[in-house]
Image (cartoon, rainbow, N blue to C red; front, side, top):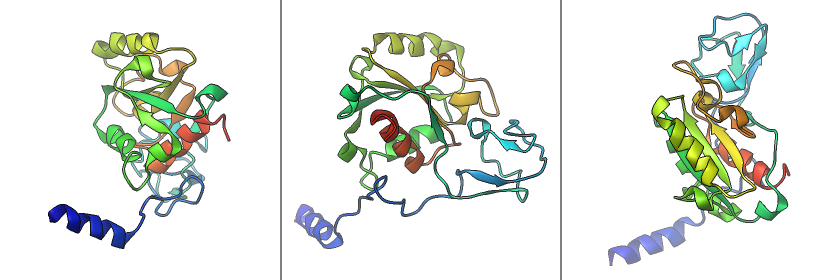
Length: 211
Protein backbone atom coordinates (compact mmCIF):
# COMPACT_ATOMS: atom_id res chain seq x y z
CA UNK A 1 0.00 0.00 0.00
CA UNK A 2 2.82 2.38 0.93
CA UNK A 3 4.58 1.81 -2.42
CA UNK A 4 1.32 2.51 -4.23
CA UNK A 5 0.99 5.86 -2.44
CA UNK A 6 4.50 6.90 -3.47
CA UNK A 7 3.85 5.80 -7.05
CA UNK A 8 0.66 7.87 -7.26
CA UNK A 9 2.40 10.85 -5.65
CA UNK A 10 5.11 10.64 -8.32
CA UNK A 11 2.52 10.64 -11.09
CA UNK A 12 0.79 13.65 -9.58
CA UNK A 13 3.99 15.68 -9.17
CA UNK A 14 5.16 14.96 -12.71
CA UNK A 15 8.69 14.97 -14.11
CA UNK A 16 11.14 17.01 -12.03
CA UNK A 17 14.37 16.50 -13.97
CA UNK A 18 15.81 19.70 -15.42
CA UNK A 19 16.45 20.04 -19.15
CA UNK A 20 19.90 21.49 -18.52
CA UNK A 21 22.22 21.80 -20.44
CA UNK A 22 19.74 21.98 -23.35
CA UNK A 23 17.91 24.69 -21.38
CA UNK A 24 19.09 27.30 -18.88
CA UNK A 25 19.58 26.13 -15.27
CA UNK A 26 16.54 26.64 -13.09
CA UNK A 27 18.38 27.64 -9.89
CA UNK A 28 22.00 28.58 -10.65
CA UNK A 29 23.89 29.42 -7.44
CA UNK A 30 25.77 32.68 -7.08
CA UNK A 31 28.61 30.90 -5.30
CA UNK A 32 30.50 29.49 -7.02
CA UNK A 33 30.18 31.30 -10.34
CA UNK A 34 32.19 33.65 -12.54
CA UNK A 35 33.36 36.79 -10.73
CA UNK A 36 33.33 40.32 -12.14
CA UNK A 37 34.87 43.45 -10.72
CA UNK A 38 38.05 45.44 -10.48
CA UNK A 39 40.61 46.53 -7.95
CA UNK A 40 43.23 44.91 -5.78
CA UNK A 41 42.21 42.63 -2.91
CA UNK A 42 44.08 40.38 -0.49
CA UNK A 43 43.22 36.88 -1.70
CA UNK A 44 44.41 33.93 0.46
CA UNK A 45 44.97 31.71 -2.60
CA UNK A 46 46.14 34.47 -4.97
CA UNK A 47 43.14 33.82 -7.21
CA UNK A 48 42.97 37.58 -7.79
CA UNK A 49 46.20 39.19 -8.94
CA UNK A 50 46.73 42.28 -11.07
CA UNK A 51 42.99 42.61 -11.54
CA UNK A 52 42.66 39.13 -13.06
CA UNK A 53 40.62 36.26 -11.60
CA UNK A 54 41.94 32.69 -11.69
CA UNK A 55 38.94 30.40 -11.28
CA UNK A 56 41.15 27.38 -10.57
CA UNK A 57 42.53 29.00 -7.43
CA UNK A 58 39.28 30.53 -6.12
CA UNK A 59 37.85 28.96 -2.95
CA UNK A 60 34.81 31.30 -2.82
CA UNK A 61 35.87 32.76 0.52
CA UNK A 62 34.11 36.05 -0.35
CA UNK A 63 36.97 38.23 0.92
CA UNK A 64 36.93 40.05 -2.42
CA UNK A 65 33.44 41.49 -1.85
CA UNK A 66 32.45 44.24 -2.73
CA UNK A 67 35.24 44.80 -5.29
CA UNK A 68 34.32 41.54 -7.02
CA UNK A 69 30.83 40.03 -7.18
CA UNK A 70 29.50 36.69 -8.48
CA UNK A 71 27.52 36.74 -11.72
CA UNK A 72 25.73 33.40 -11.56
CA UNK A 73 27.51 32.28 -14.73
CA UNK A 74 28.30 28.59 -14.20
CA UNK A 75 30.92 28.24 -16.92
CA UNK A 76 33.87 27.97 -14.53
CA UNK A 77 35.60 25.21 -16.42
CA UNK A 78 38.17 24.84 -19.17
CA UNK A 79 38.82 22.10 -21.69
CA UNK A 80 42.04 21.51 -23.59
CA UNK A 81 41.08 18.15 -25.05
CA UNK A 82 37.84 16.45 -25.97
CA UNK A 83 36.86 12.80 -25.99
CA UNK A 84 37.09 11.03 -29.36
CA UNK A 85 33.81 10.54 -31.21
CA UNK A 86 33.74 6.88 -30.20
CA UNK A 87 33.07 8.01 -26.60
CA UNK A 88 30.28 10.43 -27.52
CA UNK A 89 27.58 7.94 -26.59
CA UNK A 90 28.27 6.31 -23.22
CA UNK A 91 30.84 8.04 -20.99
CA UNK A 92 32.09 6.42 -17.79
CA UNK A 93 33.75 8.32 -14.93
CA UNK A 94 36.06 6.85 -12.31
CA UNK A 95 36.33 9.25 -9.34
CA UNK A 96 39.38 9.26 -7.04
CA UNK A 97 39.50 11.20 -3.76
CA UNK A 98 43.09 12.29 -3.18
CA UNK A 99 42.20 14.26 -0.06
CA UNK A 100 38.96 16.25 -0.04
CA UNK A 101 36.66 17.73 2.57
CA UNK A 102 33.84 15.78 0.92
CA UNK A 103 32.15 18.71 -0.81
CA UNK A 104 33.34 17.92 -4.35
CA UNK A 105 32.30 14.28 -3.89
CA UNK A 106 28.81 15.39 -2.90
CA UNK A 107 28.42 17.71 -5.88
CA UNK A 108 29.70 15.06 -8.30
CA UNK A 109 27.19 12.53 -6.99
CA UNK A 110 24.47 15.18 -7.28
CA UNK A 111 24.59 15.04 -11.08
CA UNK A 112 23.16 11.51 -10.80
CA UNK A 113 20.19 12.68 -8.72
CA UNK A 114 16.70 13.02 -10.28
CA UNK A 115 17.10 16.81 -10.57
CA UNK A 116 20.01 16.53 -13.03
CA UNK A 117 19.94 12.82 -14.05
CA UNK A 118 23.27 12.53 -15.86
CA UNK A 119 22.28 9.07 -17.08
CA UNK A 120 19.86 10.68 -19.60
CA UNK A 121 23.00 12.14 -21.18
CA UNK A 122 24.74 8.75 -21.11
CA UNK A 123 27.10 9.76 -18.30
CA UNK A 124 27.73 7.13 -15.63
CA UNK A 125 30.07 6.24 -12.77
CA UNK A 126 32.07 3.03 -12.79
CA UNK A 127 33.71 1.25 -9.86
CA UNK A 128 36.75 0.14 -11.84
CA UNK A 129 39.24 2.21 -13.85
CA UNK A 130 39.37 -0.58 -16.44
CA UNK A 131 35.92 0.49 -17.65
CA UNK A 132 36.48 4.25 -17.34
CA UNK A 133 36.75 6.87 -20.06
CA UNK A 134 37.76 9.66 -17.66
CA UNK A 135 39.60 9.78 -14.34
CA UNK A 136 38.04 12.38 -12.02
CA UNK A 137 40.59 13.58 -9.45
CA UNK A 138 39.36 15.46 -6.37
CA UNK A 139 41.24 16.88 -3.40
CA UNK A 140 44.73 18.09 -2.55
CA UNK A 141 48.00 16.20 -2.84
CA UNK A 142 48.50 13.44 -0.28
CA UNK A 143 51.57 11.22 -0.49
CA UNK A 144 49.65 8.04 0.22
CA UNK A 145 47.42 8.55 -2.82
CA UNK A 146 50.20 8.98 -5.38
CA UNK A 147 50.31 5.31 -6.37
CA UNK A 148 46.52 4.97 -6.22
CA UNK A 149 45.94 7.80 -8.68
CA UNK A 150 48.78 6.77 -10.97
CA UNK A 151 47.80 3.09 -11.07
CA UNK A 152 44.16 3.96 -11.69
CA UNK A 153 45.19 6.04 -14.70
CA UNK A 154 47.48 3.30 -16.01
CA UNK A 155 44.67 0.75 -15.75
CA UNK A 156 42.32 2.81 -17.92
CA UNK A 157 41.99 1.88 -21.59
CA UNK A 158 42.91 4.36 -24.31
CA UNK A 159 41.63 6.87 -25.24
CA UNK A 160 41.20 8.46 -21.81
CA UNK A 161 40.81 11.86 -20.17
CA UNK A 162 41.84 13.34 -16.83
CA UNK A 163 39.35 15.65 -15.11
CA UNK A 164 40.40 17.74 -12.10
CA UNK A 165 37.35 18.65 -10.04
CA UNK A 166 37.48 21.57 -7.61
CA UNK A 167 40.06 24.17 -6.61
CA UNK A 168 42.06 21.71 -4.50
CA UNK A 169 42.62 19.33 -7.41
CA UNK A 170 43.47 22.16 -9.81
CA UNK A 171 45.75 24.32 -7.67
CA UNK A 172 45.90 22.88 -4.15
CA UNK A 173 43.33 25.31 -2.80
CA UNK A 174 44.20 26.99 0.48
CA UNK A 175 45.74 24.07 2.35
CA UNK A 176 48.13 22.23 0.03
CA UNK A 177 49.22 21.56 -3.51
CA UNK A 178 47.57 19.88 -6.46
CA UNK A 179 47.64 16.05 -6.57
CA UNK A 180 49.69 13.86 -8.88
CA UNK A 181 48.65 13.91 -12.58
CA UNK A 182 46.76 17.20 -12.14
CA UNK A 183 49.22 18.86 -14.51
CA UNK A 184 48.05 16.45 -17.23
CA UNK A 185 44.37 17.31 -16.80
CA UNK A 186 42.50 17.93 -20.03
CA UNK A 187 39.36 19.16 -18.24
CA UNK A 188 39.50 21.54 -15.27
CA UNK A 189 36.27 22.17 -13.36
CA UNK A 190 36.81 25.06 -10.96
CA UNK A 191 34.85 25.81 -7.81
CA UNK A 192 34.96 25.14 -4.09
CA UNK A 193 33.02 23.06 -4.71
CA UNK A 194 31.79 23.43 -8.31
CA UNK A 195 28.02 23.30 -8.75
CA UNK A 196 26.33 20.29 -10.39
CA UNK A 197 25.50 22.58 -13.33
CA UNK A 198 29.18 23.33 -13.93
CA UNK A 199 30.21 19.70 -13.54
CA UNK A 200 27.50 18.42 -15.87
CA UNK A 201 28.09 20.99 -18.62
CA UNK A 202 31.86 20.47 -18.56
CA UNK A 203 31.53 16.69 -18.83
CA UNK A 204 28.92 16.95 -21.60
CA UNK A 205 31.23 19.22 -23.61
CA UNK A 206 34.25 16.99 -23.03
CA UNK A 207 32.22 13.93 -23.98
CA UNK A 208 30.70 15.52 -27.06
CA UNK A 209 33.78 17.11 -28.54
CA UNK A 210 33.05 20.58 -27.18
CA UNK A 211 29.59 20.85 -28.72
